[in-house]
Length: 142
Image (tube, rainbow, N blue to C red; front, side):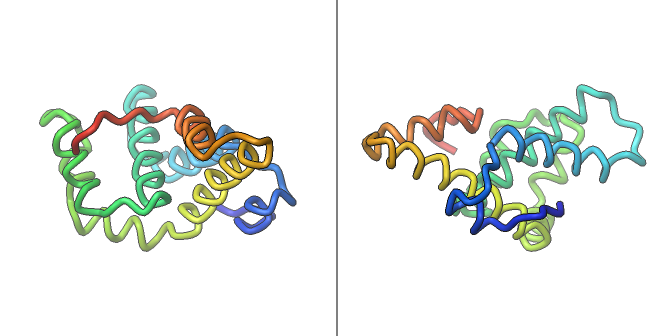
């Protein structure tokens, strides 16, 4: 993904770039990458969501091993991409190849929290705001 601005510009507030804009751009990038495959709209949406989870995981410094466990637990055995998404080599290569995408997401998340803190919210309130904004809800556990 190519932006005309940097994660630092987003983090500093110089550029306004929302989590929704980020997700839209990420979804388009994934769709372009997978265009040659004959995937249903439903499958594409799920794959986009799972890649967003992966990039979020990396943005908050989650371990690749825990991500693998998360996917092993939460993806059904008949899910088309389970083997790929639980393959450690794929996870590590995806992390390496997408550092810029992860850095941008990290900047967006930090900007969301910083904005709330600047408005006078507590750290806990800012965390809840970010969690609500990312659209991913994790149970405790893997």
